Length: 373
Image 1 (cartoon, one colour):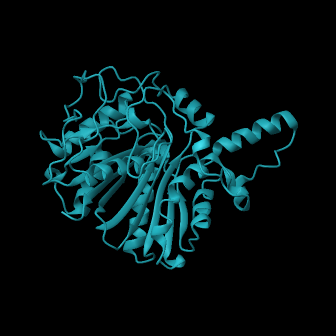
Image 2 (cartoon, rainbow, N blue to C red):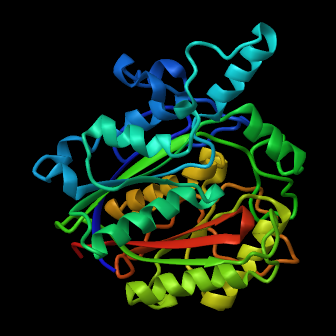
Image 3 (tube, one colour):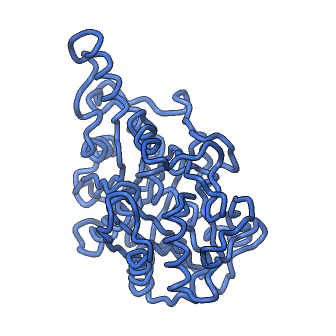
């Protein structure tokens, strides 16, 4: 698979700068300031949610690039794991105290499918429009689906995005699993004690026209091992990486940077370390988990982290994202090659792999590459 793409991302801090993401932060839970987000117009009031406001912020960046494509030949695929559930929470609180649902609430605000419907309406797209919700793999899954729409020649251009905003349901759910850290997360450390949650969105425009960046391959697998715990041996994770390499026509030795899923939870990091070493052997590529920088953006994480890979590829003179941790490796895990903030991609290996894993055993690996080298 070779699919040129353009991307734009917004981080948990709400700062926007084209291909830029924020630097280190230390809060356990992040929030994008509402004042920084676009307002859903009254004509689309049924879709009014904080999640769709964040989605608008990134979608506007690709609007001009859609000109020239027939609207019925443009598709949109949105990945999210909660959509506007926060609006549903607020509506239920209103009903609890007043006996009726609030007049401003519409089920489309929290419906998962509403995200893609809104995106299509906002951009004037009349081709296929749908939402995928495979937990934390949703954003990466949207890119896979977009690639398929192009390969099947159903579309000439596809907008693929991941979006996630926080809600009480999300935070309490992760807290009930004992999966949250009280400080910045510490991936692959012997002292890791959980992840931190973030918000974010990233959009990709995939077409058949030339672009410096391309989606080279994607691999998917399903463990079905446990509702929330991964297969300890990492068999499904390794299979997803292997399939991505095969589709890209690459070998393990060709990967210049690996963006790890790296949630800093005990089971996930152990599984991923084993899977990476099983595939790459004693020479794993420069790798880092960027969740200490962005938080775990859940349904958006696969798209946000693919955008981080895209940023690294578009500026090969820039150091790779540093693996932020305490430097205390877990002796129970196979050692990986963690970036130190100074290392750069080898220009002879202009390919990045991004791993995303999710509840229910959904595993996705994406490979992005420079198309002009």
